[in-house]
Amino acid sequence: MSMGVIMLVHTALDRAAQVARHWAKAGCPVVIHVDRQVPDDRFDAFRADLSDLPDIAFSSRHRCEWGTWGLVAATLDAATMMLGRHDVRHVYLASGACLPLRPVPDLLDHLASRPDTDFIESATTADVPWTVGGLDRERFTLYFPVSWRRNKPLFDALVAGQRALGIRRRPPRGVVPHMGSQWWCLTARTLRAILDSPDRRDHDAYFRRSWIPDESYFQSLARVYATEIEARSLTLSKFDFQGKPHIFYDDHLQLLRRSDCFVARKIWPRADRLYDAFLGDAPANADRQDPQPGKIDRVFATAVDRRLRGRAGLYMQSRFPRHGFENGATAGRYAVFHGFDALHDGFRPWLAKATGACIHGHLYAPDRAHFAGGEAVAPGALTDDARLRDYNPKAFLTNLLWNMRGVTHCFLYGPEDMPDILWHMARDPNARISVVSGAWAVPLWRAGAPFEAVRARAAALQRAEASMIETLRAPEAKARVRIQTMAQYLEAPEETLEAVAAEIGWRDTADRPKPPALVDLHDFGAFLQRLRNAGMDPYLTGDFPLLPAAAPRQAQPRRYVAS
Image (cartoon, rainbow, N blue to C red; front, side):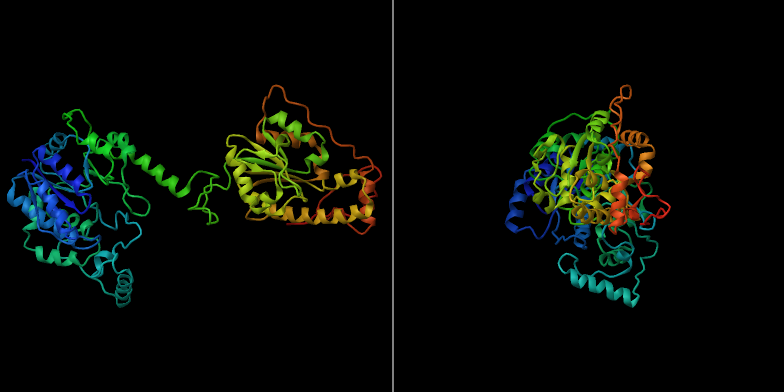
């Protein structure tokens, strides 16, 4: 017999019996430890079920609780029984939730080619800080007389008290604390040296009061007595970002096969497909590669990243309440335009033809959301109702972009639109915001409304635009922002239009449509002068062009408002 198996069992006894039979059928003696917390009637039935197999024995039972000495005591008793009854070269420690992935002869051949190698993950806390959500070096320097799971307040109080008193335990002579996976495969020589060590009493006393000793007892002592250590476990076990083990289900079948690993844990007890596939008869394969858990590490890393970060622009319950914890504010790039539609009557049709993007109107207009094509409902059942939109304007935008992923969206925005969405757009790196300040005055001038009403409306729009520009120029803004005064824009409008179209992406570089014509601004200068004569200064937030009928500009120097 070249390998014996120790199984630590505490639940799913039917599956543990199935795996134990598999090991015994392959010629491996098995010693099983059943947690003392398992009811006696269930233990007796489990033992009776395996009584027909002479190579399966049961060790004395201990109460096994996570993080306590009971797991080590159970392993030590089972190892003593194994070495006392059987002449084996290696001893493999497994749990009742472990499942052999390859024929047992493959594992025996692998061990036979390395007769003096101990397979155990073993690293110092200083070299590999891999602990997650718990104590690191202090698990070896403080005392832990109580269970963390059963009495967490007392556990934390004892840790705080020992820190305050400066208590610091020292390991036994010659022992350097190491940590690693609980699941190992040690040579009988190394395991017997640990069991029969003259310092065994000191070793047990030290690790008995350490925290999670099953991850440090054998890992530390193997460094003392082993001749050759391969610091890895032959058992495939994966942990999430919280340090909790991943559970393998039926849909992981091909993933587990691809790993070429010998054993995997933790297997869901109801994964019938996995147990049927891996515990069936299969011939040994000498051409199989050595275990390669790294081949599926990328899959697990991707899964952890998806769990923590999610998909860009998709809000979910675990991240939604936390500002800044989302993976991207929106699902894709989009463009926002202010003032262009006021200066070009055909701006939207031209932009749609030039870029092929989805060109909306004012999505945040007071009356309704003006979707592209005048639709009342957008994909994802987003209605154009202003009340529903304003209930959560941020979600309205993020849902629209998510529901139409792969489509570039553009929409208009101005000082009359809902201001609550502006800060969200300003801090969104996906946003491309182009502003022509002062263009709000053109629709007022063209409307031909009574001047008193126009005067009051102009003052309100000027204040709203000033606030908008201040937000876009804030240090926290991450959007790509282009702000031009009306005078700057009219100096070279075609140049700006080509730039914004290039940012979105030209549909066909060979046949670009001509830029839309500018509106006729004749007598617009007189309108501005009349606003100034009425006590309002439209030049506070920007610069207007020198137009016919405008008053001389020398009396009013050009002024800008800094954000």
